[in-house]
Length: 233
Image (cartoon, rainbow, N blue to C red; front, side, top):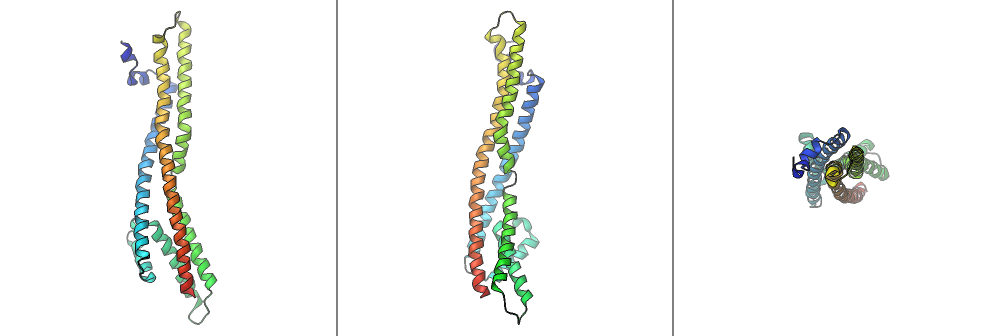
């Protein structure tokens, strides 16, 4: 068998020790799961951004808030997957606002503070739910990015140990004798980096995008609370 054949990736992987093969299999599985979350999160964030921009343009167009609330509630009942995060935050605030306002009755004096506090609490609760959904699986990407290189390094260290142990039975150590064992070991590190680098890049990018969305949601809550305050008065 030629040296080129001995050092082919398939040959090196199949002839690696069982520990190194298990490390490679683990890293490949983690990489597949990581790429799945990367694409799912990419589509989810893009959809959230588009829905947020669409709802903001409708909200600030000056339409009637009650009609907008009825449309949002209807959209949620008929197609929950097509409603945006900001629209659900708005609906939660308006629903609580109307509920508390109705509870006072026609002849009772409306407590403006109670109205605003209730609406704000409802919007903050909806905001937390939306952020929890957007941030799902980000911790997994962070863990993959930080741990995968060390897992690959574990396979590399183990493989190099086996390569040098094999030299104990050889009278004359040459590069050709030790090269396959070291190459087998280094593949584990390469696979670890292959799993870690995309996860780190995706985590940093998605964290930035989610932070931007969070700022837009919080700004909307404050601005909408001012509108409700004027209506309550």
